[in-house]
Image 1: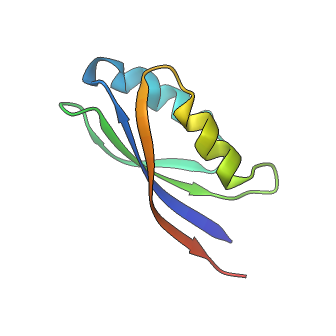
Image 2: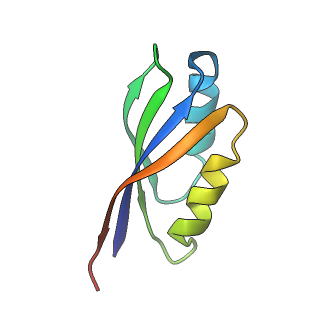
Image 3: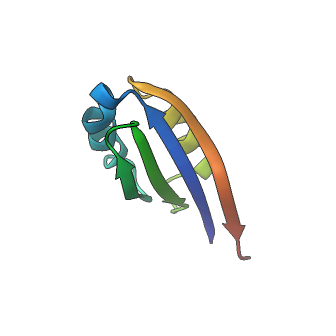
Length: 77
C-alpha cells in the first residue's frame, strides 16, 4: 500500500474546475479546499490500475493547476 499526501495549488478562479478533474482519477480523495487561496489537499492511494508517480504528473498537467507538491508518503509492503 502506498499513500501520498499532496497539496494542489490552483488560482481561486479555477479551483472548482480542478476539483472536478481530480475526482476523475482513481485513488484520489479530496480532503480540504481553501477556495480563497485555491489550495486543495488530496491523498493518492495506489491501485492496481495506477502508479502514484504517474498520477502525480497527470495532476500537474491539469489546466488551472499552478503546482502540486508531495507533502507526505507512506509505504507499507
